[in-house]
Image 1 (cartoon, rainbow, N blue to C red):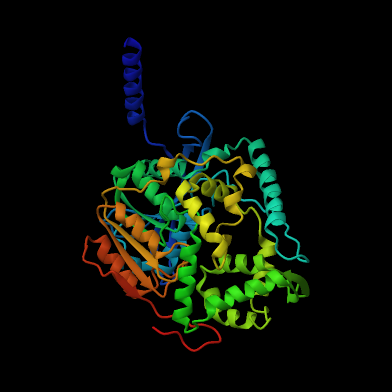
Image 2: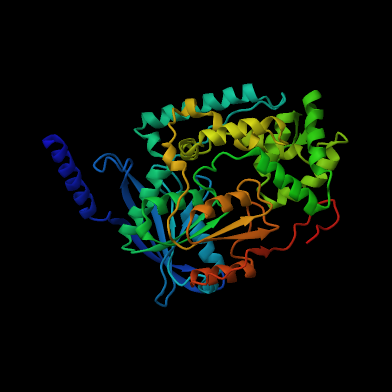
Length: 482
């Protein structure tokens, strides 16, 4: 009994000490003007925030987060708006700076507070940066092969992991829960009481984790192309449904069947092609197989420019003409690599529930793209020695803050179902389906979206459930139906 009481008192003392700990200081503080494209001048503050690499060890190894704060000349009245970039691995600082430069004075139509960009741990200007140029070195003169390509990916990943651990980097600390604690540490360092988190794709995954762990610091959530706690690995059936919707929107009802036929054709007989190599300007031999086709589509399907060519490519491929897809396949083979150890570790730590993994395995054999939306990342746990976060991490988030979710109905990476599943657990959430939007779409360049975002930030809860963007112009086909 005495031991239990002592343990309880010790826990309370530690909790009080943690609560009383001063916020991390801003370092390398620098102020400068930021001139937007419209000529307006904004005030830019650059800084760094030091945080523990492992928040459970506050006196252990420290890392640095790069932060920018952008404000108008007049005093803002609203809470700050924080941009959490996707990837994982993209730069929130770069996103904030680009938005400020492009938007200029017009940003006041949406934001009535400061704009803040944070480079998450391991990315951008934060230290250490976990980017790497190590490639998988997939051969060009052989068709894509899942077993042999996976061995190359594992070998490259092990080498990068070993090199980074030799530098003293604790790769296990690069997970979404640690990053969520970073975000709140930045809030404290900036002396912000509450702010609005904007998360796009993986950034929404991080925003939800931050809201769960630090709800008192959140004013609102805006989640774009949202990825919930159990959405890291994609469901093949949802990808199939979006491909069918794309076919219907393009006026190409046979597209999905054509993609299946083209895949079967390459399974039977891979194709040898002479492909113009943008790196050298010369023709390069590429042997294209079924995995190449599926993986290439999976990698580019979020880009509306590539998406607009897919129906025409499907129609050509059933005749044996793979020239439209071949340059993309070549580029992906050349560029495929680790990219960022941060990205690998974040995704592998978030992982998926047992039920979701089982569903992926059931659906993949009959899906148009198989499991290539998750390949090879999903299979690299052993190579990185990555441990998934506890199962509770993948449970729905139920924080009671106003939340707006925007999901494109042509988005195969973070489909509309994601937004609806996330919203079902949130007491004050609304889903806005963006018709004709793929994974990547211009959030602030579309007047209808800007107006809706401004209404939400000003407390208007009576928003429509759908908004329509201009239809994609599908290459080589009649104009898409609105």
